[in-house]
Length: 168
Image (cartoon, rainbow, N blue to C red; front, side):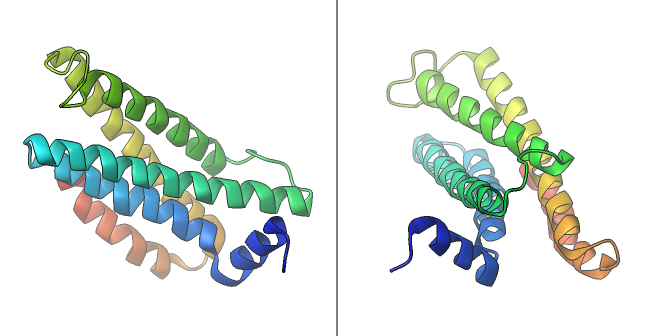
């Protein structure tokens, strides 16, 4: 069998799995978590947290694969605006998720009724998610090149259509 790092490298090269992991995490799951929370209520609040954490885990898997691939190729880490934005998104999402779990969890949050914390969590999360979507588009542009504007527009159009519902 292959060692884990070469297995991840072969998966990355054949499937571009890192891009799918991070797009699934930050666009698919985090976007769904935001929409689920907007439906309000106890169950939706709990689902919101679980879906958001699943998105975060998916994104960290993608980061691990990218990091290992760069290590294997001897390339530097976090050198582009895309990679720096992605790192800010992952750290920010982690901090917001931890704050949400500690302070706002509907069962045991220590300050779940605090309007200021709720508002801060909501708006900071929207900002981080918006940055994640911009980083996703930046990464796609890097992947496909400057000339393939059609693919970029086809990918960006659903994000632009979903943005008012998800981010506002």
